[in-house]
Length: 411
Picture 1 (spheres, rainbow, N blue to C red):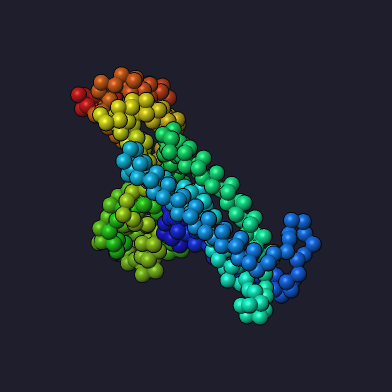
Picture 2: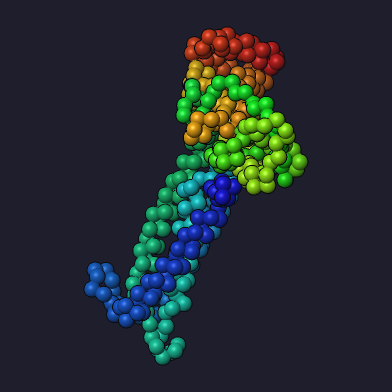
């Protein structure tokens, strides 16, 4: 279920399929209302006029044809935007458009209206057809109402697609992905579900759970692992954290028995739970992968510095947006090391990247490309100064050393 929900979120097919099914059911129900409850009589409702069979068919045919045409045009525009974004800002940002709920809803609205019109159209009969004339007046007027709503949806889509392709909007989306990933992996102290302190691995025997297929670890269903570990009274050490590429046979996690000295045998049910909790896919995603979430923002900056683009202002804004996430992380953030069950016992061990590694990777990458761009160098210096200003005692002067090393590497 975890894997299904994650994939559904980034798919173009789920919402159109769901709303299409709803449209078909709604059409059947309204036709039944017209036939069995109203018995072909037009209810006394304002703007609800009687229709001939020919008029009803013309309305439904026009709506169905128009909605299918608009749906195809909208899909073509979306594909064109995906291609432009991939070539200009990086192929890894295509996921943002795939996961955009507004784009999914727009496509779903047009296709579901088309299906609704087609289902209602097949129920319109004249006396010549079968001797039993029937015009579902209510269902046809609902189709007209849906068409009016879809006009507003089309206007919204044009505005949304024009807004979402702006570089500032893309950067904001990537920044929000980074913020969510950081809030998931780092804390400023312990709470009733997480700890950031050193965690001792049980000395009892251990068993391993290996991957059954290849792919990147895209996310982990941590609550399921905590429940499984609590139920079997063990500690699960997740070796393959989000962002790591594994092949079949690689260790996903080690399972330590809470008591006992012999080797711990992982039962089949627990092994299935661990495997199903680790979602593998063909590409990295920023859902829980902090390093990749920051990499996306850095990639926008680097592509802005490319010779073909030569847009240092994009790189400057990317660094400024990274500041709002990295400064609180550098000041208060510590990687979560363990997840607790309801009794307060550590059940799952995590291994998130150290904040110093994230900051070092950012400055090292930027230093490779910011030579000859004083604006970008100044933005990187501002970021370094802000991090140094809020650094706790154990991180004092770390940013300065990282920045100097990055400059040396870049030169």
